[in-house]
Length: 259
Image (tube, rainbow, N blue to C red; front, top):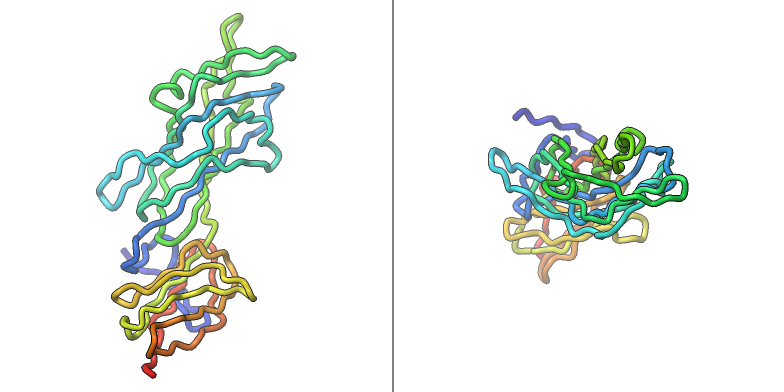
């Protein structure tokens, strides 16, 4: 794979198509959110019991993994005009997300002309509603998948038969954070590492036994990176570390001085 680098203020910004070479756990964070395009109904209530993600690490599939979600009934028509809700989140191995699956319970209803009727979701109550995602997660970055449920195109009724959902859902993926990585020149210093914006500590981590560190899930902005090494070592703070959404900012080698 060809590596693309952008040089900025002495730092290396690695594009989102790559996975960091840090020896920290190679994980990305993924949030799944739900929104809706308006439909001509009073309520459309779906009973969400599980959200599952299918991930491939290289050529290997890790299978379906469930998020920890807020189970329950969601009225899709309350999630219109830019509103959304967080269904759940999960930390996953960096790699390619191929599909997402919504598993629905039995308590699905629709309200029309002040009458509440059952809403049948044949596939969602058994194998789940499967959506293709096909996106790559980079280590240290936080991502959001927005499930845009098009109610107007998804609800079907024929004569006196019950309302049925034949879901039309767009899965929109975007990165919502960046990350900072580097390597201290003397691993034995084992420093705590802090990303500080103005007076707020936004993220923290520790260098591992090889001296490598990564502060994950850092919002875009300019940071001071501060180090607290073991006794007998000194590391100067580094100002002006720029973080861009979807990018891992590499600080390269960080000099450690023995007292």
